[in-house]
Amino acid sequence: MPVRRRAFIETYGCQMNIGDSELMAGALAGRGYVTVDDPARADVIVINTCAIREHAETRVLGRIGQLQVHRRNHPDLVLAVTGCMAQRMGKNLLDRTAGVDIVAGPDSYRRLGDLVDEMRFEGLPRGQMLLALDETEAYEGVDAIRREGVTAWVTVQRGCDHRCTFCIVPYVRGSEKNREPSAVLREVREAVAAGYSEVSLLGQTVNSYRIGDWDFARLLQAVARVDGVRRVRFTSPHPNDVSDRMVRVMAEEPAVCPQLHLPVQSGSDRILKRMVRRYTVQQFLDTVGRVRESVPGIALSTDVIVGFPGENEKDFESTLSLLRQVRFDDAFLYRYSLRDGTPATRLPAGDFVSDKTSGRRLEEAISLHRSIQREINEGEVGSEHEVLVERPARSEGDVLGRTGTGKVVAFPGTPEYRNTYRTVRLTSTSGPTFRGEAVT
Image (cartoon, rainbow, N blue to C red; front, side, top):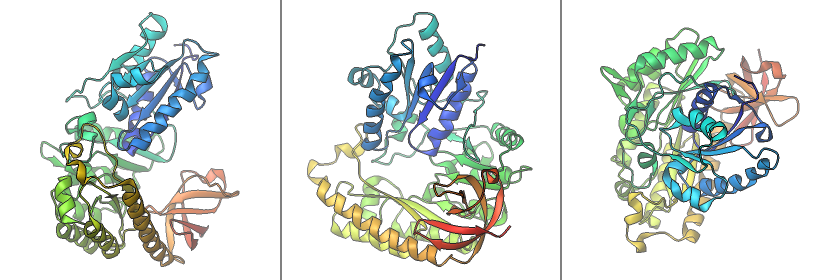
């Protein structure tokens, strides 16, 4: 097929969306589209979206308007909006925003290339929607095209069976669908053959993976033992599914990185119950204790929502207390963002926390976390770590990489260091990141 078929894909949101963008690149490649880095050169522009927070959607709406400029020199350009925001808004996205030609949800990417060509060459009208959820669609047979980074993102699970009251994901991605382990392992081996040594397993609640007699612990162990795999990470696990066997695999398999993202969301049992998280603070702390006992030195990160409907000052103080007690290496802290279609929208109007109060609580939580993070990282200055180099750093003459625990390090190096491992001594920290010097 002619090389003049070009696609530009812009990704918003989580690692799942990175993996989905690579799948879309593969689906479009099946129709002869080469992925390019400049939207001005593209015949089709794909904006892969997130619906977790209102701010992410607002950014996308603005970006859609900006990209219309490329129609001046390319009147038959096709602009597709895909992903969770597309699924959530559906026809409203077409009604609210001029210049969107295709709206496609997370289970519709297999058809994307066909629809683009039908629109470009066969007169299919603009404004098409692909929004059906398919409980069988795991994109087997669609080869992801990986273009950036040094990590192979491998989706093992799509959708979610949890029904947290704040979360839109189950409604835009459907119920949990787990891939066959043979397909996952085949993709990992193909990634290794393409030069990747770090693999990150993806799922909405990745450690709830189960198919036949395979659970997540067995899959994690099998991936860690694939020849050529040097590092394995996974995201995002659910605290309820941190099994003893999973922790044992993390402790015993050298390739599994000593890093765990464990979203707690709140430090108040009352708010956790309202969120339908199905664990208590003490149960979460017990899980943290099991993990730290089995994997000494593990780096823990978390997600926290402040200002959830009904949260009072006592609840918020309980969250701060949990942050002080656990001392997470990293934390992603957010104000509650109301999502139409989620159960939390049906809570009494009087329970909703004002923007002023939730904003103040967020600032306080961020300040506390940053002080804890700085103390933890200052304690690591002088230690040596193996760093996988990802890309040039913003500081001239430096490269950027991550330790096995996921800490970001900038140190002197050349572009040729990319996708190599270097032993680096940490020399200083800015709080969230480190400077270092190569030892080997």
